[in-house]
Image (cartoon, rainbow, N blue to C red; front, side, top):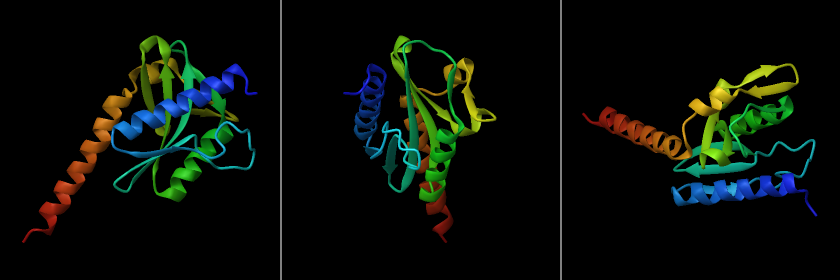
Amino acid sequence: MPSDKRRKGFSAERELVRKLWRYGFAAIRGPASGAKVKRSVYPDVVAIYRGKVLVFEVKSRGKLQTIYMARNQLDKLMEFARRAGGEAYVAVKVSELRDWKVVSVSSIEIAGEKVKIPKDVIERAPSLHDFVASVLHRGLDEFVNRSEESQP
């Protein structure tokens, strides 16, 4: 039987998948998410919307606080995103905020074998709703720009 910590992680991953699905993404939990498989390169969640691929490492915390994770977790996330032609993020469920925050891997501090996501970076990160709105809006801007370029 999984520990409370792992059960909490599974629950957060499933919640994120449901939310992304409601926003119109095709979303799925990674097949080995939380399985502690050393050689796997699977992210926790993959979401696709009209060819746009987003990959997520999912973290869940009761309070807004700095998050630490192993460097290899981030490396695997970025490798999967690279191979899929997608973008990598860390999605953080913060219970005290009653919200999700989405942190781009470009704003994460890497120091040796540890990765640090400072509290203030999480606090400033967009909420899931705002993140999704920006992803969908950006897609619309790209479509409009391509349409304008193709006109005589």
